[in-house]
Length: 164
Image 1 (cartoon, helix red, strand yellow):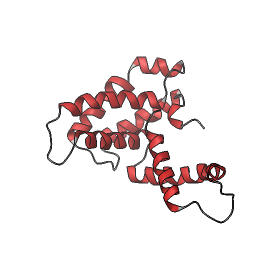
Image 2 (spheres, one colour):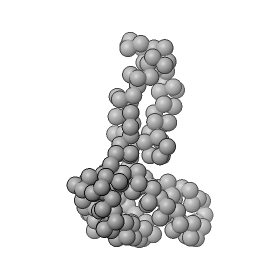
Image 3 (cartoon, helix red, strand yellow):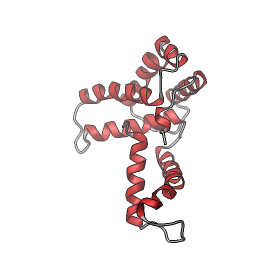
């Protein structure tokens, strides 16, 4: 099953994404961000999302949501590496937090925790039945063991965010 991350972006979807990022930059969302993240998003919006090159790529079918995410990730990796070290907060933690906020803005989610809850529920409903033959379980009322289900949900939810 292809992930939604690899689907090509249409012109309408690009406009929707631009609108979402503009709303975030205008303070019209509930996503909390510091100045460094705001600056990174502003730069991404101005340099990447609004560029003629991206518009041409979208028009030709050559731009996916994953491409957009990877551009942002590369962009922020340089920025985060140049930030001063903060006691008790690793740069990897900052990167993860910024990517979760990016995903929330990109998908139009107000709160990354709501997005994760919806994705987990969606993944459960969509993929658990396909695991039953692998685990040797049938569609009986006997549920998957909770540890196996938890592990599956964690791995699958990560795969929704991490390009393969």
